[in-house]
Length: 238
Ligand SMILES: N[C@@H](CCC(=O)N[C@@H](CS)C(=O)NCC(=O)O)C(=O)O
Image 1 (cartoon, rainbow, N blue to C red):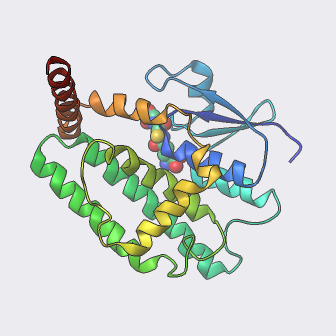
Image 2 (image 1 turned 90 degrees about the vertical axis):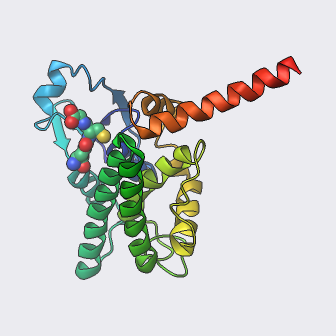
């Protein structure tokens, strides 16, 4: 691609990550512009009919919106397709990209859950999705459908990344005994395109976001911080 590409981003958005991963997989140079979603600039409102990131700016004045068409555009305009060639398998991959979006909705519901009961119910619903995925993902790995990294893998890298942060302060056991999903999750976490899709301080940014939700997960996080500071105070005073 000879035209310059700019990915209009937000540091925590998992849909933006999909586009960043695919651009990196395809070794396409691109710039990133971050916007404040709480204070959307006028040019962004004009370019984004749904008011959401990601946007892909092509050249100086064309914008694409919605992550699915954005990543398919990137895939189709560059050699070495990341979607399967077989139409039925491609349709199945597209369906699992949507499944990844539903997992993201479940994660949103999880970090917004106000009570322990809601939190547990939401986590159970997510666990059922991962159980289903454990049946679907390639047995030999490393990726969703075998040895080729596909667009569907780009959609799940950001899903699993949330759990890396959640597990840094609480035990959820969402993936317990899910051998195939766990192995896929590890492979995606090791993939450079997935790692570089977020900034180095992503974990801290997400922790700060979670702490301010006023939800059950915020209290888990604060309790954890309190426990740590009690231990530290005790160590200092002993
Ligand atoms: N269906 C959209 C979802 C994108 C999305 O939800 N973006 C969120 C951030 S992760 C956003 O921009 N929200 C701002 C808003 O809704 O005002 C896609 O696949 O691109």
